Amino acid sequence: MQGNPQTLCKVVTLLVPTSLSATTTLNNSSPNLDVDTFGFAEALIIIGQSDAITATSDLLAIQFKETATAGSAYTDITGALASVTGAAVAGPPATGDNTTQVGRIKLEGRKRYLSATLTETGTFSGTVEIVVVLLGRADTASTAQSYSFNVI
Image (cartoon, rainbow, N blue to C red; front, side, top):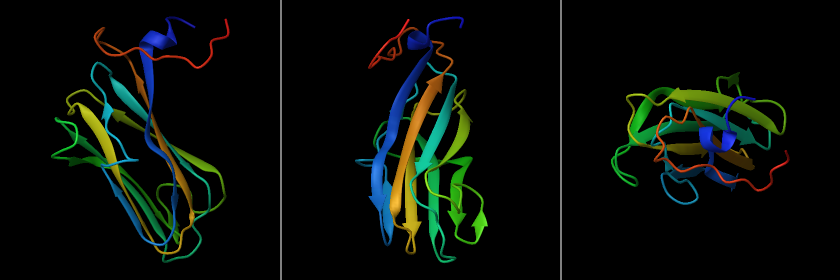
């Protein structure tokens, strides 16, 4: 592998594994945090979902947002909506437990902070997690990734 991943990428949990039931909205607040994308070229978004969405009245929608100042004035990122109802797959898979969806956002020309709003309606009862992997580090001032372990 060329280069050191520790200096080329950064992994951040945008939404810690969160249990959802009934109607839930998480909007740019704990446990849903901002991700500082300063110095990186793109964001790889990984959405993990523990349970299937089965009822046609269920909806799980994750809208990614951006802001120039952490914690305020969020705007939707056009085209960065992951959603699904029990009737049609258009985002997180409707069937099957322990599913994962991956998305990508080019960061050039975007605002510095990335966040998301998660809205769940209906009877879905499961856990959702969002992890962001920042890639293409172009600025040496951005924070390098630390490792929990390192096997060489």
